[in-house]
Image 1 (cartoon, one colour):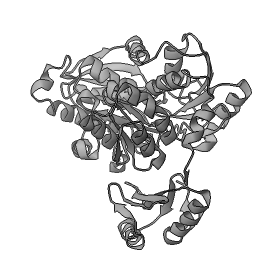
Image 2 (cartoon, one colour; image 1 turned 180 degrees about the vertical axis):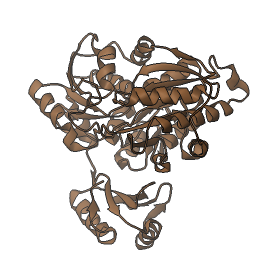
Image 3 (cartoon, one colour; image 1 turned 60 degrees about the vertical axis):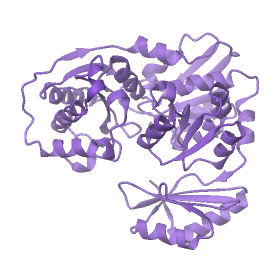
Image 4 (cartoon, helix red, strand yellow; image 1 turned 120 degrees about the vertical axis):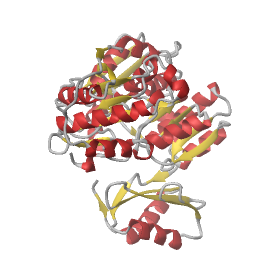
Length: 459
């Protein structure tokens, strides 16, 4: 087993070179040991405290990896509830709905077809990352010398499609104008779940792209790459739709385009949701990752909320959301988190909330977003830097006249512009985001930073 498949927040690698059935068995064995060891006190009162949920996405090697994973779990005496082929947010629902000690989703998210992996969650669907148990699982799995053991645990199959649909649609409001919406499922799990949840909604005309979910992709299932939105944009314009959404492979993330086919950045989607959520939850905290536009902070304060910046990554976002009792939160990557969804992210629930917001007015989506497009930003740009720590110190020194913090890398803020540089967890890369009040200032400051960082690389 290649130890490099263990990342900061999940396990992911090429199949079968880095990740095969033998590795899946060992990971299942290790995960079951870890999750069951975390049962304490009141947690033992969970309905299925000794059981673990397992699901998988549409990748062709998903079923065989899932089978091996479950056999590894059973060999520890753990019982498994197999919830079948599902989107990742349904795993968070299943863990809470069934009351298990945790769950594993077999998925490689937005990666190409030759990849697969495992997203592990604990009780109440809390994420298991490097700092919260994944390193322990790695230690146990890589120390196992064989894949043998008596399958003492049981396996039960459970289809939660109806219960999950009911959970998602409980957030849908009745009063909406007629809507025409395009959804690009990216040949991922949205191809299964969007028709189940949204096909029969009254007043919603749904046009779907790339619904087929057999493990092959017409475009990479990563909506953050602008080229992957091309078909969605063309269809929205051609069909004169009100807006469109593109999901990633495991349907926990999505991107939006307006009726003109313009991409709506995810921090602006979060900003669009601010008045909607603060009307329902006056004064609440709203969490966002520190790459997000300052427009978002301004909107939260304007509507009487409490802004809370957080490090990038779902483990940090979910913990902060829970600790601050925030009503919701958003990441630039397209993850949106909800207090009333177990503090977890959900692409389907985000789609419901956007239907509520955009369907409550006759104003076109582009006009609703226009007032939020008041800053100019670079997007996230990668630079190859061997001495990441040294470069961040140099940036802090050079821009010492600004307001500096090190919440995640280095953030330096000035009156009219700001930037963040943060290191990659796994590669010799620094990731830069710059934002300014004018396009001219953005160009000037980006060029200035590029002199120090070098030429951008395509990652």
